[in-house]
Image (cartoon, rainbow, N blue to C red):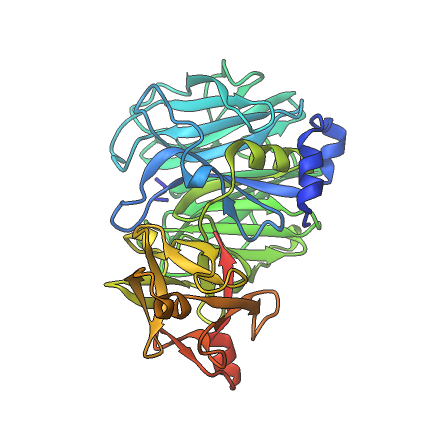
Length: 454
């Protein structure tokens, strides 16, 4: 079971929000992306088993919606979900499928999936559960695809059958009634967490091999049960990986995301390729992607500009930011014991990395960083060391806590922060502690460069 699937101006988005949904024929050229997921963190302070959404305009860097709170939560079964999967149906609307499991009781037998419908991702209606089989086992990590030869959708999921985890499939026209289950993929060893994408005449299935812990890709010219042949080598980053998430990007390239095993590890790793048929994937640098805060085992779909604008308008963007390090991209600016630090994500309390980026306390043209979990406390320098202190409203404090945001010293697409009252010094990390220092070397420029993200 998984423990964990072009920029617009504000004016463009506002205009798009008032448009009608694009017809299916126009959706081939998606303008943005949406991710669905649930959340966990190392000590489970961030655990929430409802449906979470995030959006992205490049498919790499994600912005949570609804303040990273769920947009809908199951009201039947276990009252929680894992592994949500969003599918655009043939009529252009959406269906959401999810594992019926609230928490981490992986020994629970459950034959059902949660299901919702959505017209445009601004509401989720028609909630129901559908029974997929009668086996004394689980129904985990659903994925779905359109089988044109049958004129039906296939719902594929993990279940134990014959003593090991394999993939079963049920076919449906309406996601309300389903056919009897069939074995879909049984390579002779345990498999988990399938994701399926149909591209032209080929159906691709990516999965986790439970024998060796690696991700693999299989393909079929028909998409029919028991017709898939594995064609890639094993893929893994970090110490463990699962929940492959396969996406054909807007530029025609492909991305593969893998969820780390368990909430204590980095949440996602990524690969890319220009040709999925070649079976060769390049590891992505973590500088180049930022998953949603605490996100686990999600799914990604392409969406239109109208759908992007509608989702943002309905659910709202975060009232907080995070600062990601340029040269240690798995680490984020946080406070711990009132000391400013750079620590590897994830960690708890996860709120320690969340900041309200407000007008500078000493100069409104600058910025100050107010702690989300300690309101009224701000990052400030004292003897050039960064710490979190309660605002005492003195001129000295306001000056110490004010910075000018500039183009990143190591990457102009990122940001650096120059001290207001020590104007030759910038916010940087040194031995993972935050300081304000003069910057001259290439390493120091990297230390002083951050991505402002959510």
